[in-house]
Structure formats: C-alpha cells, structure tokens
Image (tube, rainbow, N blue to C red; front, side):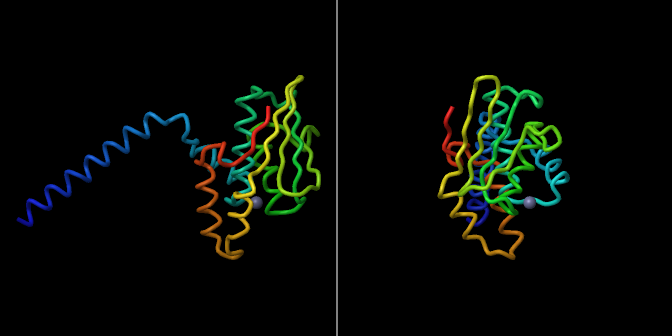
Length: 166
Ligand SMILES: [Zn+2]
C-alpha cells in the first residue's frame, strides 16, 4: 500500500517537473540572463533591487530603441543617493550610456523615472508605486530579503514593474 502511494507521488512529481521544464523552454525569452546579472553585480559591488531595476530598464530600452551607447541619452530622475541611485549603474551597464560620455544624467526627483532618447524616439519608464512600496517595506538590515526581491524583480514581467510610455 505504502509503495503504491510512493509510486503515485513520485509519478506526480516527475510529471510536474517535466511540465515545468517544458514551460520554461517556451517562456525562454522572458527569462533574464543569469550571466549578465552576475557581471552587473561584479561591476556594481552588490546585488540590490535598484541595480536590477536599472538593468531591466536598460535592457528594455535596448530592445525598443536598439542599443547604441553613443547615440542614446538616458535621464534618470530619483533620489540622488543609494539605494535609489544604484539604478544608474544598472542603466550604464546595459545601455552603455556612461557618466564619462555624459550621456546619462541623474536628476533629483520623487519616485523613479527613466527617460531614454535616441534619434527622435523617446521611451519613458516610471517605476510603479506598488514596487516602490514593496522595496520600502523591506527590513533595512536584512541583506537576504533585499537580494531575494532583487532576484524576483529580475524575472518579473516588465509591465508589472514600470508604467511604459513610448
Ligand atoms: Zn547599490
């Protein structure tokens, strides 16, 4: 009897596993690249939600405007200090807009808004209030909670993170 239950349980688990793998394969273009994340963390120094939000914004801008580190301009409006300003490093890392080239700027503002300009095209991403609330509700000293949210945001659908205007 026990053996039968075990066999049935294992079969169900195996089936669930196969379904998950299959699903993952289909949704592959939604899954963000782990290698890019670990390189960005090396560049920035730590893993945090605002770094990841900057990566997501930059990757999305690359998709919409086609990546061009020379022709693109990025304007980030937020609090000009960490953790919010960590966003800038995510954008620099992905878009190639850099402080040195002066094609990224940080302007003091409320919430978080990123504007990308290339040729005559403009893309604006505004961080949703619920994501801001989610980050603000994290316990300040629990690094693991910050890293877990960062990882979650790295895989979350872009429409659930930003208001997008093209
Ligand atoms: Zn940071």
